[in-house]
Amino acid sequence: MGKSKTSGKKSLVHPWEQFPNAEGTTFICTNNSTKVSISIVKRVLYRHNLKGRSARKKPLLQNRHKKARLRFATAHGDKYHTFWRNVLWSDETKIELFGHNDHCYVWRKKGEACKPKNPIPTVKHEGGSIMLWGCFAAGETGALHKIDGIMRKYNYVEMLLQYLKTSVKALSRMGLPNGQRPQAYFQSCGKMA
Image 1 (cartoon, one colour):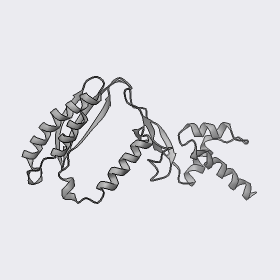
Image 2 (tube, one colour):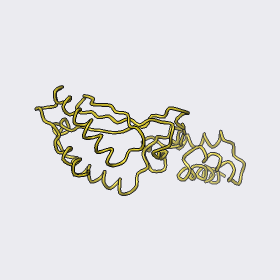
Image 3 (cartoon, one colour):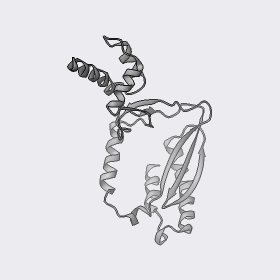
Image 4 (cartoon, one colour):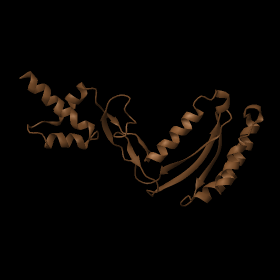
C-alpha cells in the first residue's frame, strides 16, 4: 500500500518537468486516473521542494546567441577588475505603457530560475511600449535616450556613435580611471556601418 502511495506521488511530481507553470496543475488534475484535488497536488509539490515562484522573463535566445555569449565569457572571464572599470556598458529596455506585464508563476526548485523550461520567453515589438537606451561604467551612468520607431542596424550604429561618444566624454571627466576612453568600440561601430 505504501508503495502505491509513493508511486502516486511521483506521478504527481513527474509532469512538472514538462509543465512547470500553472497549466501543469490542471493537466495533473484532469489526466490522472484517480481524482486529485489541487490542494493535494500543491502539498506533494511542496514536499519535493517545488514552490510557486514568479517566472522570470528573458530574451528568447537562439543557439548562435548562446555560443556568442559563451565565447565572450571565455575570452574575457579572467580579466582583472581594473580592465572592467574601463568598460562602458550599453543596453536597451522596453517599458510597457498600457496593460500590465503578464505575471506568471511556475513550480520550480530554488536555483532553477533560468533553466530553459522555467522563464517566459520575450519577443521584441509587442506594442504599447517605449524603448530606452542607456549606458553606464564603473558606478557612473551615461546618457539615456528614447528610441523612436523600429531600430535597424544602421540607426543603432548612428545612435551609438552619437550618444555613446558624449557619454564617454562625460564619464571620462567624472573619473574613468587614468583618463582612458574605450576607443576600440567606436572603431568597431564604424566597421559595422
